[in-house]
Structure formats: C-alpha cells, structure tokens
Length: 317
Image (cartoon, rainbow, N blue to C red; front, side, top):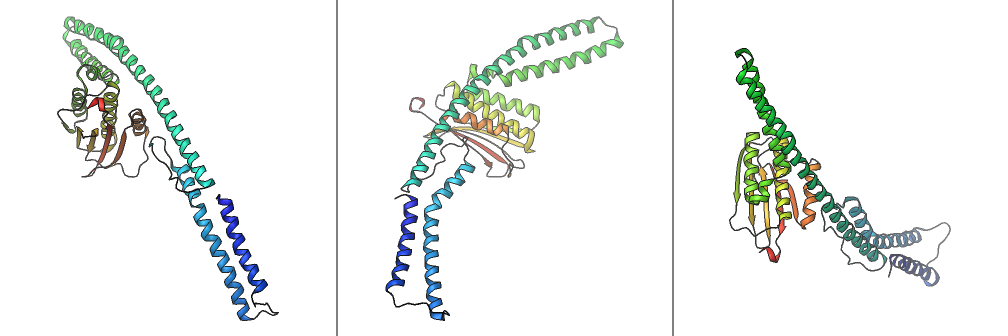
C-alpha cells in the first residue's frame, strides 16, 4: 500500500469512528457545552491528532532519510545506500535513488580513470621536457660557468663559482621535480624501492625524522595499483610537510589476508575538523579506480593517519 492510501485509510477510519460515535452513542452536545461533553470532544480530537501524527511520522521517516542522504552523499565515498525495507511508493523511490547512485558512481569512476590517465600522461611529458630540455640547458650553463671560472681573474672567479653553485642547485631541483612527476624508480625497481626513495627525499628536504616499515612477501601488484599507492604516499607526505607541523613521519606497507594496506602517519597537530582539500580529494579519486578504501583521521598517538586499503584479487595472491 502506498503512502497516500495509508494516510487516507487511517483518516477514513478515524473519521468513520467519530461519525459512528456521534450517530449511535448516547452523546449529545448541549448549548452551552457542559464539561463532560467538552472532555469527550477534546479527547476525541486528541486521539485523531495523535493517530495522524504517528502515521505521518512512520510514513514520512523514509523520505526524511532520503532527504538527508541527498544533501550529504559524496560520490568519492562509494557504497552509501538507503535500506529498502519499506513497501509501496516510498520503497520504489528509495530503490530508484540507490540505482541512480550506482550509475553515478560508475560514471564517476570511469571519468576519474580517464582524467587521471591523462594527468599521468601529462606528468610524463612535463618530466621528460624538464629532464631533456631544461636539465640539459642548465647542464650546459653549468659547464660554461666552470670554464669561465677557470679562466677568470681572482676577483671575478668567486662570483662565477657562486653562480655555478646556484645553477647546480637549480639543476638538482629540476631533476627532483622530474622524479616527482614521473617516478622512474617505480617503473624500474618496484613499489618498495620507490617508497623508500620517496621517504628519503622527504626527510632530506624537510629535515623531519622519517621511519618506514615494509612487510616482506607482499603480493604482486599491477602497475596501476602501485602507482595509486605511490601517489597517495606522495600526497600524504606533502601534506605533512606543508600543514602538519610534525617532527616525525611514519610510513608502513603491509598485507592482510584480504588486502594490501598503506599507512602514513605523523605526530603533528592533526587534521581536526578542517574540510578536505584538493589533495585528499585527489587521493579519493584515485582510490575509486581500485575499489579501495581511504581513511583520513586522527592517529592513535595524535597527529593524522592516512590509511589506504586495496583489496587483493585472487590472481594477486
């Protein structure tokens, strides 16, 4: 029975009972109204209002849940659904809404895959240009400064050496940016080596203490999964350096019977109630590609903990 007929039926029953009482019960209304008659009338009205309120509360509760879900649903957190335990028109509306979420999440995952693939291609192109063009140009400038410094008189030699040092630092920075854009060590040596290199580079440039724990015997992962692990770790460490005000960062990679888990934690000021920025939203976009789970919240000892859980497939075990 639909919500309309349930409400109509209850109102019909209540009004029918009230009419029957007026027709067959020995109850009359005098003028002026006496106290007993007023009590009976007010009591009947109260019963009608309570019955209608109870039915409306029960009948409209699914619509209230649906409204709340519509205002809070986030496609980057898939799996949010309403129970379909009700019957009638409301249940059909909830089933339609859940089906719409299924479709939107599938479309969002497909769009994210295309966008991230294009993004990675652009990263590789920029990294190649930085390495092949900017890097080579700076190398040529560095060699020219060295030759000029070797032949210059002593007062000018020191200035040329300072320019040479500045150019060398710029060349190192360009190479570091190229490695961040295109982690060649990930393609050549695998995920553990890439994460180790990432952590070493993080500690060198931030001065923070960095520790890691990589479990032996991790299941083999495809390149797309390894890239998601690497990018999530990279973004997490970047957020620690920029926002956490931490003194220590920890990175762990381990497996469970059902999944491979990456954890990045710090001892900083914590994430608090701040809204998620573009970096965390980008990490959630990547997790959609793998059907993975990303949790960002306070760590057990303070600070912030980022946990990426990727279910293992049978062929990976």
